[in-house]
Amino acid sequence: MFRRFWYGPVCSVFILFLGCVSTGAYNQIDNEIYAGNYDNGVSLIDENRQDMYRQRDVLLFYLDKGLLTHYARRFDESILLLQEGERAIETAYTKSVTQEIGTYILSDNTREYGGEDYEDVYINVFNALNYYYQNNLEDALVEIRRMNNKLQFLSVKYGVLMTDMQKMALEQSADIPANEYLATAKFNDSALARYLGLLFYRGIGQYDDARIDRDYLKVAFANAPGVYSYPVPASVDEELDIPGGKARLNVLAFSGMAPIKEEEVIRVPLPNARWIKIALPVLRDRSSQVRRIEAVIDGGKERFDLELLEDVGAVARETFKEKEGLIYMKSILRATLKGVSSSVLDEASDRTEGNAGLLLSILSVGAQVMAEATERADLRISRYFPGKVYVGGITLDPGVYSVTVNYYAGNGRLIAAYSHDAVEIKANTLNLTETMCLQ
Image (cartoon, rainbow, N blue to C red; front, side):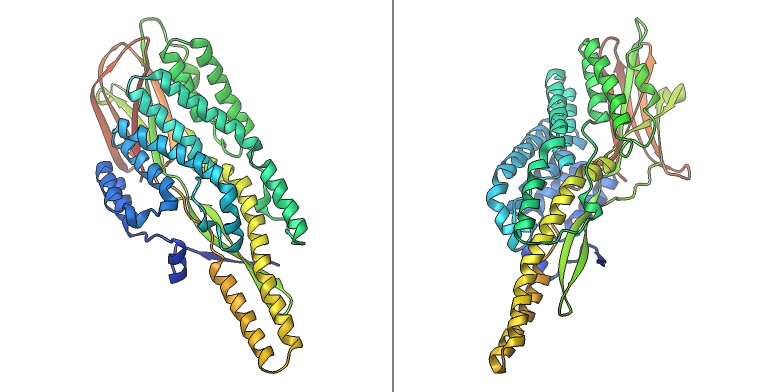
């Protein structure tokens, strides 16, 4: 039977050698973000870049800073950073074959960080929004199509890798016990991507394409009930039913922050009272105070609640499933290879007398200690994707309005309010307002 041990982000000297980053700088940035001071968060990333991001972690720098510059409405800068992040993911993927051997000897921390699947796909969401705010809906739609293509690729991405891993396990005579980590992901479409496609196509007058994305949004909900465990937002059906001469205001709101990783340790017993250690990364949600989001027009003349469209944490967990299976299998193989050397030395010491036997016994213990020390989970992940995405809309007469978005805790306490004055709402175009409260 497996024994499990849970570890938080505790760093030993050896983990520091493998690249465990102090959480001090992150805590400072988090505090600025909770307060809505996104420019200050960007400055702290720049000031602490060398301490926070190793050369093999450059993707994390692009993702973290790219998201914070978006929140700070520095859209040109955000586009460039997220584009660099996307290129870093592609580069890491092409390098992964040559870097793979090191992960069988020490740990996954030795390789260049190539990103989680959800990070890769949501890059395009934020660059689509960046382009929208630059009045460039064509490039915004290109980003949405790129995201949809990536999601379709997820269904086949891990098939060959899993087959190769199973073949290697047979060659090494490694026993791969059945486990929940070998689950299959069931997610290949994003309601958020389809929603933005719906809005962008409507914004340029392509109503047939907008209708197709609206229908695909509903299919995404139906096909992934484990991710979309809540109803389709009611406002979705209103988006293509705007009376002539009227205008539509859409509100997009982000809350909380996406999961981070923690280490789970499993110990598999071996003969001679020994064991192999398996260290796995697991996603852990970060709690959010936000329970309700309300949009208020002109100080209360109109108001409506926003509805949950995408649980980014649920998407992150679902898309991590198949990669988690690969990590689990590789960890078993790596731990087996490490454990074999200790067991061989231990058996040799039992057959050898005198000082030679003692030396072999010491070497066996040393091999066990080294295996224990080097088996560490790869806990790298970006920190500033939002946890949830809410949407809503209202049909108004064209004109100039004030728009306030209120974020409430579960007890009804107002957490944050963001007001936009003199917002011009035009007919026959997309009027999209975005806010975020990452608490």
